[in-house]
Every structure is written in structure tokens, then in C-alpha cells.
Amino acid sequence: MSRLGILTSGGDCPGLNAVIRGAVLGGIISHGHDFVGFRDGWRGVLEQDVVPLPRQAVRGIARLGGTMLGTSRTNPLRDGGADAVRDSLGALGVDGLIAIGGEGTLAAAQELSRQEVKVVGVPKTIDNDLDATDVTFGFDTAVQTATEAMDRLRTTGESHHRCMIAEVMGRNAGWIALHAGMASGAHAILIPEQRVPLAQVAGWVQSARDRGRAPLVVVAEAFTPEGQEAPYSPRGLDAFGRPRLGGIGMLLEQELQRLTGIETRATVLGHIQRGGAPTAFDRVLATRLGLAAVDSAASGRWGTMVSLRGTDIVNVDFAAALGRLKTVPEDRYREAAVLFG
Ligand code: F6P
Image (cartoon, rainbow, N blue to C red; front, side, top):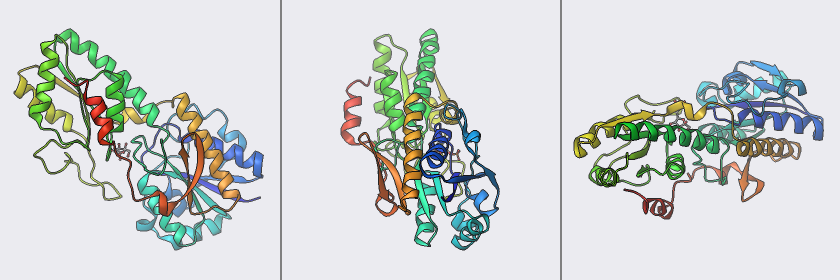
């Protein structure tokens, strides 16, 4: 029997609670482990801020959004270092960690594991941009939420004969835009992987209008129009040194209205995409990842992360898992673009 600690770190995402439940139940039932949860990610580790996680603490939580443990963008390497993490785990009698997080969190977990901290990672992001796993949990829920929002934008757009713009998340990749845009029948989908001149976007908008439609444009927050250097990021950097994005939709609103003369309205969906209950798909994926993470810990596969390959959950070394992003391939964009305009 071991004592394991669980933490959720970085931006939250629907399905985190289902991972926690899967890990705790699987660990208790299959391995006789006991668990503590660290509050607010690595902050809880550094400050020894823990909650006990007995079986009853995770009852019924798979269907709930957010994370029962809280999260933060505390970077353990910048804010304490491996020694502080090891000391804290030692003081609490914690033998190993299950760290649920995105690229920033997993990169920190990788470095900690190089410095002898026992960690198993669980990949998480609504953006679906981690190359080492076929799908990240939270993505399906975000796409569903964005699609529902776009269905609503379409009805009001049609009433007013307007062009509607929906800005969705996607820091490095346009997966949410691509999927929600296809699902809602958007007339243009703009993603960071593809530079498109605004005149081309205006052409798609105009052609949809010419057929009597209220044009819908879906734009990922990191889309960079041809001729501009970097994604629109007026709000500085986050704790991991990455640009805080958001607002390109408002710029497009002005530009498309100017270029087409069509009254245009932009909506930034923002964190609505990260909130609320996970879909059934995300609950199942998250539960399986939680179960697999404790199995990995029980068999000493530290320094790895669990991931989805096809329909199987597998282990991947941090070294192989990180460093490459999964962006939207050209052919997936071309496939969608057949229906633009
Ligand atoms: O990485 C997930 C994500 O939701 C991105 O899509 C977005 O750019 C970012 O996090 C927003 O982060 P924050 O919650 O810090 O504003």
C-alpha cells in the first residue's frame, strides 16, 4: 500500500473530477492505496495544503465540471524547485504524485521526475493540442458547448441579417474552431495553422450573404491574419511565459464590416468553453485515464504519462510525450474549406 497525492494544475477543463474519482476508486479497490489531494495544483504541494481523499470524497463527482481540488498556474520549478517538492512529499508521507495538467504542468512534471520526484502525468486541455494523446478529455465538451453557442448565434444573426463571429479558444491549435465550425455549418473557419488574408474571409462572408444566408465566421483566438506577425495578445504573459490570447474576434468585427458593409457582431466564448458538466465521452475518457494512472503508479512506471492511442490507454515517457504539439493538418483544413463561403 502506498500513499499517493493528486493535483490538478493549469487551466481547468471538464473531466478533471472524473479523473480524480477514477484514480481514487481504482487505487483503493485494486491496490489498497490511500490518497490526499493537493489544493490548487503545485501551490498545494509547496505549501503542504492537502485534503484527505477517502472513497466518499469522490462520490458522484464525475458528472461535475471544474476540479474539486482547485487549480492554479503555480510553476513548481520557478516557485520552489524540486527540493521543496521532495521535502513536502516526505513530510506528508506521500510516495508519489498523479499530476493532471496541460503542456506547462507536464513539462514541470517531467523536470521534477528527472530530479527523482515520482510522478505520473495525466494530459489535460480543452485545446486537444498534445501530440502524445489522440484526444484530450475536455475537448469534446468544449466543442459541444461552442456548437450550442453557435447555433444560438445563427438564429439571432438570421433575424437581423447580420454577419456573426464566434471566437473560440485554442492557444496553439484550431481543433475547437475546426470541429465546432463544421458542426455548426460555419461559412468560414479561421485557425492559427492557416494564414488567410482578410479579403478572402470577406469574400466568403459576401458569398454566404449573396445566397441569402446570415454568415457565421468561427475564429480561434490564436488566428493570425496574413500580413500580421503574431496572434492578437494585448494582455501580456501567463505564469508559464505564454501570451494571454483573446480579442481577435473584435478586430475581425471591425474589419469585416468595413470590407463587406454587412453589419457584424462578434462574441468571445472564452471560459464558457471550459465550464460546466463534461459530456459522456469526456467522463469515460477521464475515468479510464484516472484508473490507468494509478495502475501506472502501482507498477512503478514513474516519469510517464497515460494517453489515448486509438481506443487503448497506454503509457508514454514524458520525454517522448512532450515537445511536440498536435496541430490541425493541412488536409483537415482543406476538407472543411470546401464548404466555406
Ligand atoms: O490551454 C487552455 C486554454 O483554455 C487556452 O485555450 C486559453 O488560451 C488559455 O487556456 C486561457 O487561460 P486562462 O484561464 O489563464 O485565461
